[in-house]
Length: 329
Image (cartoon, rainbow, N blue to C red; front, side):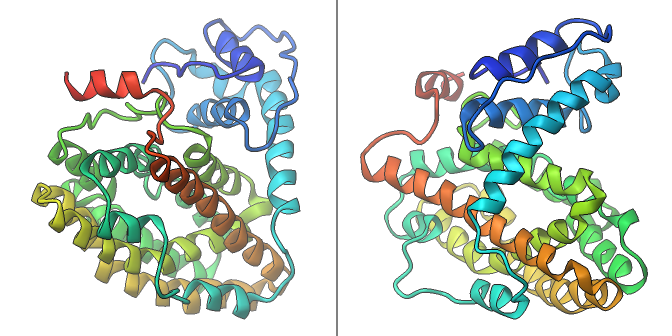
């Protein structure tokens, strides 16, 4: 994985630092909007040091105090933005119940792709989601040592499925790589990161933020529950869309794998993970609600970006020219 291209002064400083050697020099923070391209790619780059890292980047940067200080400033901006843009509160039943409501007629991205979407739009969607699905359940694994008892055991059961039940070829990240290959796209890790705009990147940044901070363990559980609860219906529509478009079976399989599995995961997350966690730590109820609401907020921002781009007859990606070149080899 090569370092991504900067998208503003903050990410320029991050990339410039990582091209050098940690030497204790201060790396000045540059203010940026919480949902900007600049902050999104800066945070994603900083978080990637805790995942696979980058080719030629000194591994010592992962825990460099000055880089962590800059990341903390960026996280504060992002987290403050999220908290100010959600309703908040501790109405967990209301937050969970809202996830189960299917609006008729639906106007979401999966509805559009099922009924009207083109193959180009489907491939753009695959590129957007690749920045998450190449990681799949990795960010959620960070919360495991922060849970206890039944909550921990239940979450590990869900994670076990996400990681293929012990089979490397059935890991969901591997199934997504198979999907990309089936679509004629590159399955290389984060190949499309430079093409993907901030709305898709922000979702993964949220997961990394919640996972890396013990104080946000409740928010991470809320996010994970929201993801599992909403996946099965959208996965069903995506499978229908891909069948309509005559897609490679590997593309369809990724979504059919999630229809039944995530319906089961929904019950485990609601009853065993959240239920047990709040029995042990009732003070985390508002954090769980925040995780659900933040997930819905960022998913809605991505959906709005996709639909507005496609409705205008435009690409939803940042670099359409690069996209066309990559598609043609």
